[in-house]
Image (tube, rainbow, N blue to C red; front, side):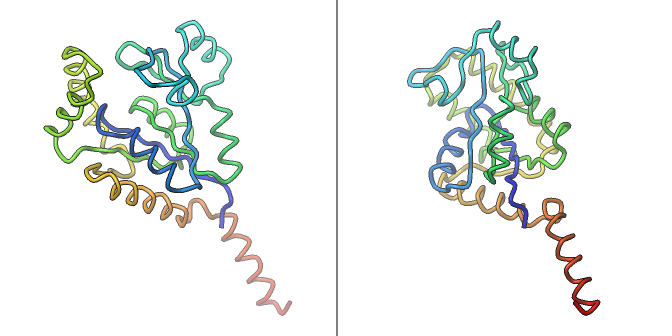
Length: 210
């Protein structure tokens, strides 16, 4: 079977719990690598540079764009977000499944560049639950929350573009579902062409009496 890791793109509405879901997945299983995105937004309380995000100035981010150091980038609610290229490529070569937690604009760009990337859209059990989670974070003003809800409605029209959706209701069950989903993809014939060709060639030799 293929020794190379998968590129897994995770998107979802702001406040749906993508970050918590991904952290639990990484801590429970050792075959994943979470790509840390770069952003120009200000750090939230408790966030550290290089852990949640690489926090960059607008000038620094635009220098990364200029030097082709990003796999993708996009603008969201007035800030840049992007995926540093080198880390992703290195981890995949080492056999790690690399998780990219990015918004829909970035996911679309990734899918265009890497057609066999696995895309998953994380959704809440209901719109009301999404609103309650955003309010419950207590980190943003009502105006920002309203903007995020409006953006979520816009993003809902992109759900059909993804390979899978995953309802994030119970955290432990969602983590298990995500892991099972990703591991099942490893058996897809798309990712095992080299293995199948080698198997076929060996069978041909044996059928000819070797």
